[in-house]
Amino acid sequence: MRAAVFLVALVLALGTRGAGAVEPSEVLSDPVLEERAREISLGLRCLVCQNQTIDDSNAGLAKDLRILVRERLLAGDSDQEVMAFVTDRYGDFVLLKPPLKAGTALLWFGPGVIFLLGAMGLMRFYINRRREMAEGGAIPKPLSGTEKKRLKALLTEDAGEDGAEGDGP
Amino acid sequence: MNLKFLLPAAIFAAIAVAFAVGLTLDSQRLPSALIDKPAPRFDLPPIAAVDGTGDNGEPYGGGFSSDDLEGRVSLVNVFASWCVPCRVEHPQLMSLADDHGVTIFGINQKDKAKDARDWLGRHGDPYRAIGADVTGRTSIDWGVYGVPETFVVDAKGRIRYRHVGPIMERDLTGTILPLIAELGS
Image (tube, rainbow over all chains, first blue to last red; front, side, top):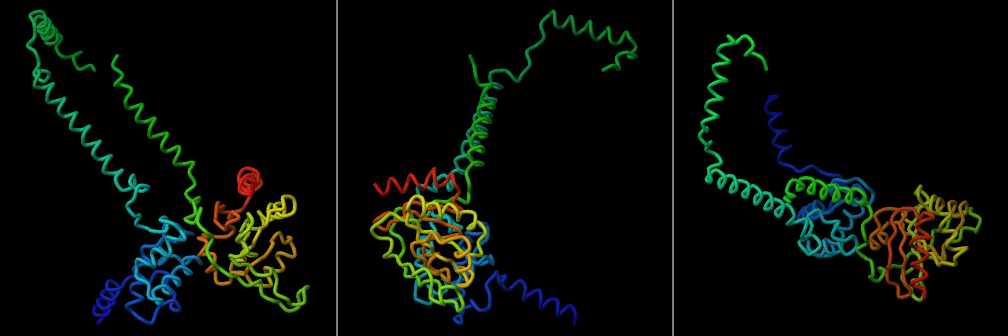
């Protein structure tokens, strides 16, 4: 029984969206219009607490804007017209998804450009390394005569000392 | 000479400069979407009558409509008695009106009539006319985020400048008075 209640509660909780800050008195009686109002509200920034949507925020201005969105919808505006109504007054900043235009090009393409620059740098690094290896940089040159002699001397010297001091750093 | 070894330092310097610039930008100060556009149309009533006040319960402030903006450079100031920074900027508004002869219109946002009248009685009234924006809807038409906010409107009724937050002495001398002088000439 307890499990069943839990399950029902879980399904209900997952099946609904959070109520946000929308107050019961603001909700439209037409569920279709209300759903559109919620969708629009989720795309509009609350200008007072700038990282919340007007749907989430309980600032006074957010409430006013929620009511305004619903009024425009009741007046027969399309979603685009409602958005235009708000951006005419508050500019693109009010949109949580900035539109693609000259002023926002850096925002939209900046990360891609930085990624490409990074990828190009990495590619150059690997190409250079491969070339250096092909030019013989990776294969060590055989030791010269004097080097061989010195190596031999070092090895025998080491063995002769019984390894007692050879453990040094 | 190969200066390649300087590259990391140069990249660091470039990023440091970009961040330094970013830190000095104030993300709250956004240009109004209405700059250089005509002020919105509106017609606000005066601050409502309150019984038992000094002026025998008459409405106060005369009301304020978009038609008032035609014909002269003016300042439109959104204020409220409940707004603390409004008190900070009030002396500057009084000085603008009294010493510089600037026409200031007031939009009294979401205020109780009695509070607004008491507030103006206590701190002085620099406004040529006041409209009461009880619902806050006219403020939204002006693109107001919060009070206080002030707009400079030219003689053709176009919004030329928007100031967010209280007007301080340096804003007067540095920006607002020069702009009014320029627009008025």
